[in-house]
Image (tube, helix red, strand yellow):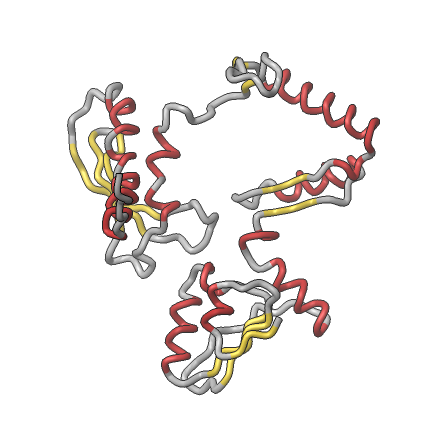
Amino acid sequence: MPPQTIKRRSVLKGILGTLSLPSTAFVKSAAAEETSLDEWTGYSICDNCNQVPSCGIKFKACGNIIQSIGNWSENPRHVLCSKGLSTLQRLYNPNRLLYPMKRTNPKGNDDPGFVRCSWDEAYRMIAENLTRIKAKDGADSVMFYIGDPKEPRPPIMRLARYFGSVHLGTESSVACRAACMQAEILTWGRPSQGSMPNAKTKSFMVLASNVWSRPLGWWQSLTAAKKRGCKIIVIDTRNTKTAQFADIHLV
């Protein structure tokens, strides 16, 4: 059988088909409980990235059920990323967890045997397991991780402190600018938010930060500066998109 050629257009069609799935499969189950047929259009902001960058959402609804989500073109931040476009999955996915679940079959089984349990039971199991691991392997064998949104950070930090573990991670450790801030502290003693290049900037240094993946127009500002003739210098041990874009990449 001759090898098949996969075209980029076919791949993109598959991706777009996946993105359109929430407006069909996920919404149908929710819409089945909706008796009102009033159709209307509304506007909101995406909160998947916490309080910022608040990208605009334009949605169509039938009664109280959101049918589709798209870009709010009049909003200054009007292009939704994959997280914003998948909001309906977060709302209506039938597999979304709404209460604590506990495993009844050993790990490795094809069927974990998850059953619903109370919050009190869930907290008790977590506390018992943490206490057992600490007694056997020490507090530092446990790492505490906080994702987004950032509001749970203080209580989890306090838990890690009183538990005795020095291992704490956040989404900023891998996805934001924690590495950049640490590099700034080690280099000149304090972190700096800095600012993006303006029309007078002749050279611009990026230190341990992948500007390509950051919101708020940072990447657009950097590409515009390079078109004006600004030289981009990136200091980063990683071969990021920003490092590849730079005129000089120092590792």
